[in-house]
Length: 208
Length: 208
Image (tube, rainbow over all chains, first blue to last red; front, top):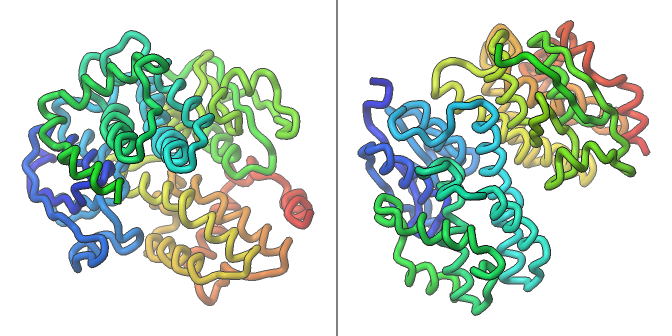
């Protein structure tokens, strides 16, 4: 089986991006060795495997390194084909890729801007766009967790923790009922839950 | 055949991103309707099909719209399977996705910084990384043009035109012999060549 062999993940507990990789592997039932990095003093292994970006997550399968969480998620999905993260239909696959990229390039940065710079116009428009995408589905992937849900870990779990840390509220049940329900269902999913960092740790980090 | 039906591309002639979509379709032999946009006065159709980003390229297949050039390229590759743009091997596919994202997120922006702000340290490191990836291959895809080559249109064709416009030189045969040979081979590829905009038009645009 293509998926066999040694799997290493270099991450930090507080990063929504390395958390994505752990969640995907756990959903697929893939065993892996986890290395917690100190970003102030990166390990020689991290620098060896990710010389361009030198950042987490870095993923290594049978000695072959990969960087960029969304690239890693697609590799995991193609290598371990049980519990598919991407839909079969090419257009739905493209939509899932688009939404994941939208979360990284547009939505999560605008949320940060809203909470720290207190300018929430753009963040609300972006969250409304995600809200409309859910449209009757439990998860972005349908009945089961998929690529967009995992990409959205930063919205489902990190965003409410940041809100609590900075004392602001953006993702309200009144304005975003579907996203709030999704966030609740996602962070309470038994596999996802097990891989999320302690909420208190995140709040303390963002307060600091 | 999944790939049949109506294909529309909304682009601007001077954009390396909309050019990518045209090149991929042409390589696959897919007929499409092209709509030249005026970015100062975007068409109602563009705004309808791409309400989030409102930008080019926007791609529509049988009424289903997609944005983001790399997402569109993967959709095209999955829908029209002749002349594959991505390798078969999952690790090589992931590397191709990583390199395409690297070109967009890191390499091309650093090139712009080098040529306009005259700070070329980062751009040279990034180009050197791409140079080393070629390593004996004619194209990043091997013997034939693939995803990374098409993503690299901005380096192969736009970069030399910008160099000429601003009177600076970054991609020299002395420092980057493999990239220079690749750039030459790529822009002279019969299909690619046909879809590149007139060089004079680009130079005039970047002078202005």
